Figure (cartoon, rainbow, N blue to C red):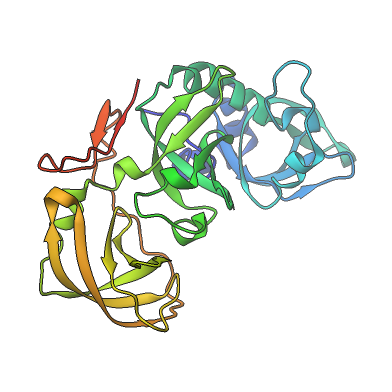
Length: 311
C-alpha cells in the first residue's frame, strides 16, 4: 500500500485535522514524523510559504520547499506555484515569531526525501500507482506520484484512441491511476495510462451492430473519420460534410470485426458540445491490482498484436 500519496490525496481529512487542530497535535506530529498537508496561503518577499495550522502560523522556508539533488537550486517559480494548493510537509521545529507568537517550521523537502527513499525508489515498471494531474502540455500530462514528486505521462500513453491534447481526458487536479512505464538512467519515472482502460474486446463488448451510440470525432483522414466510442476504442466512418474534430457525433454501428480490430460506423449527426470530460472508467480494481507484467490490447483472433510488456 502506498503511504506516500500525491499532494491532495494524502491523510484522511479527520486524521490530518486532528494533528493540525492544536499545538499539542503539531508537536505530536513532529515527534511521530508524520507527513501532513495544508494549503499554502501566501509567499512572502523572501520566498517563504505561509500556512494557517489551526490558528498557529506555519512557515516553510524557501530551502525547504522542494527536495533537490546536491547542487541543484530551487527556482522561484517552484515556490510561487505552491500558493493556493495543497502542500505536504513534516514539522521540523518551532520558533518565536512576531509579537512572541509561536510558529511551526515546515519542510516539504523532508517529506519528499522520505517519499523518495521509501516509496519512489522502490517502484518498478508495471507498478500501478495513484496520481494527481498537476498541469497539461501539448505533449502530455504532468502527474504527482507522491508528495509532490512529478512524472510525465506522454500524450500517446494516455489512451489507445488518439487525442489532440491531454485536456480532452484530464483537468489539473484530477485524481487518476497510472502505470510506471519505465525509469531512465537518471532515475526519472515515466508513466502510462492506457493499459488501465481495457482491451479491445473489453471495450467492444459494450456495443452491438445495429445500435446508434454517442461518440467523439478524433481525427479526419482522406479515407474516413475516426470516431471514439470509448477512450480505448474507435471506429471508422465514411467522410461526411460538416464534421469537425472534437465534435460529438451520433453514429450507427454497421459491423464489429474482432479479427481486424475494426468497427465500421455511419455518422448520423455531429455537433460541437460543451459537455465536460466523462469520468474515467478503469478496468482494474485499484485495491487489488498493484502491478501488471504484460497487457495485450488486441484479441487472440487478430494477427496484429498490440501489447505492453513491463520489464
